[in-house]
Length: 169
Image (tube, rainbow, N blue to C red):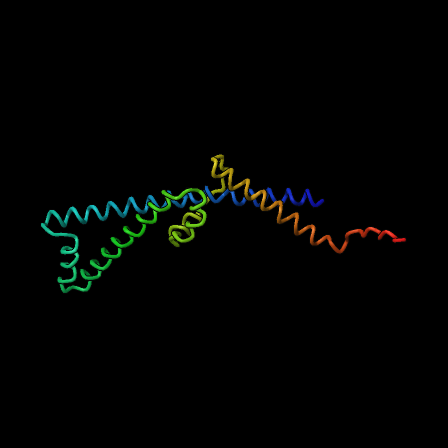
């Protein structure tokens, strides 16, 4: 019974852990899409500023100098957009450069809550057949088997038959 429950526990944890590479892939794709869109906005702003003979900083300063609260608010929004672009671009570079082990330890640090939540909302479980997915599945199976087997063994201790003690002469 312990072996059967251990196998069930191993399969369950293996299936659960095997989903991490798929989620990481979907998250990375969403992050890449966000970076691509922010790159377009940043490039268009920089191109327009250059056409007017301005640097990015000078163009943003003109928003503040306009003396209009709406225009000033747009300048602050553009500044936040550039900051977000830089932050997400750096995040994407680090995630893409990480190996399978580093990705599992680093992804929580990189998890942009908005992008991560949207990726999770649309997440569809998949059976990964990549080496990384199989490694996660195998690790999950071993950990699940050992954990479930250990828990069952511990819970069954009170019901274990005791061997009679040998009589010493």
